[in-house]
Length: 209
Image (cartoon, rainbow, N blue to C red; front, side):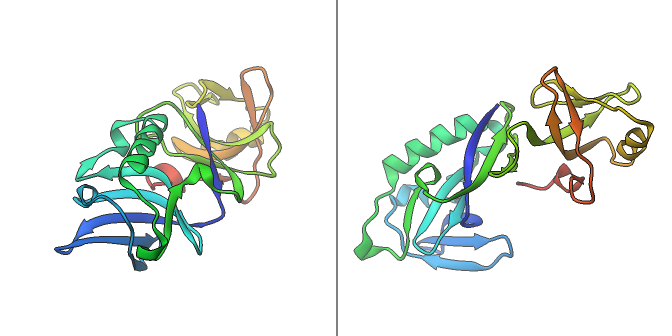
């Protein structure tokens, strides 16, 4: 498992395309589009998509979805994408205030963080966000139901939930075959789910981070 800081910027996408001239767009999660002037090598504008965090002064590169029309996300691990993104940034991006409306930088250079994103080593793995004030022995984890009653596997570390009570068993059965839940580490290969009205969700089954 690896991790990266998540900042306090507005999440969205940096889209580099042509219309027919090179154009750089920031698209937020509500599909609001902003056009920006950036100093980037024109060879990047054949439909490249970066996940970014936007602050008033910067677009911070957080992940790589597609480069020049070639899908990257589903074919690589987060660590591979992060290294590829560093290579692209240092090769193609130049900050020149006189010719740009916003700066571009790697998210690792942000100063203001609100938590961490944890990633497994699987290709196409999506990050699991953990708030910075969360107890170090607690984490929001993906859980998968097995064919054995009351046995739930945590694929990120090949450990398991501990189902201590019948009440807990009944609640977990309502969550489906895959879900996310905040858990406390027992440091013995098992985790206790911390159930409340906010801790268990199914929404991450198919949606991007």
